[in-house]
Length: 251
Image 1: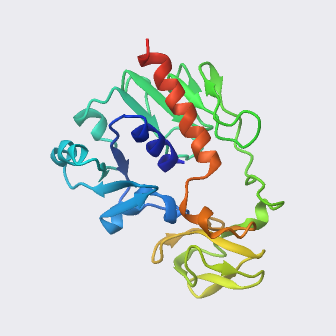
Image 2 (image 1 turned 135 degrees about the vertical axis):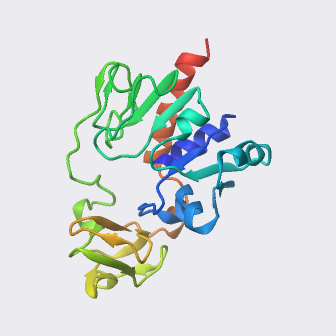
Image 3 (image 1 turned 180 degrees about the vertical axis):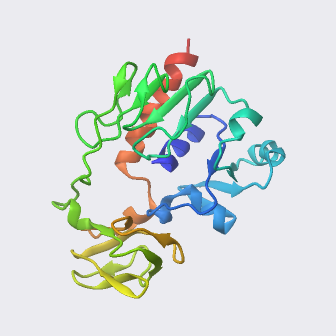
């Protein structure tokens, strides 16, 4: 979701900086700016995120048209940069410490936040009629635990770790898969796909995972291009964030 938001804001003329954890756990790595943390840089639909080691590198990267991304799990950048807008796109389903006074405008994505208390605006992230809606009072819809339906499949399309352990992929993002085919292992335990389609997302190998953790995503539509382009859901959420910013600053 974060990449969709960042892409829309940068394309709209905003300067954006991303704070990440040292080992990002994004599944849809083919279209996630956080891949710049381990790889040094990541291009998504014509925009490039580049890892910066210090806040001092940020202005230079902006000047080059790059999106700076720093390892900053504690969010120290909010004090260093003093941004006009802070967006909590962690998607943890709860507030991990974002405060209303972190920036002049604070926007949070999804459940776990109350508009007017934790953030100035909350953006609806649940698929359906309200997706992307800007909430100025109250909360987003609660987390259902059930993935959105794509091509007639919901829980079946999500790959989850069969045990605690070290994750290793056996296929690559964009590869076609058949129902029953092993796409990854956790400490040697095979993880087969429940459906046929294309592997839209897969966790980076070598990471420690918990049993039941989402580690992959199979798209039953079978369109490889969808693995490497921003989803309609992420674009809608990005549009909601853009609207919230313009409500305040386009006066």
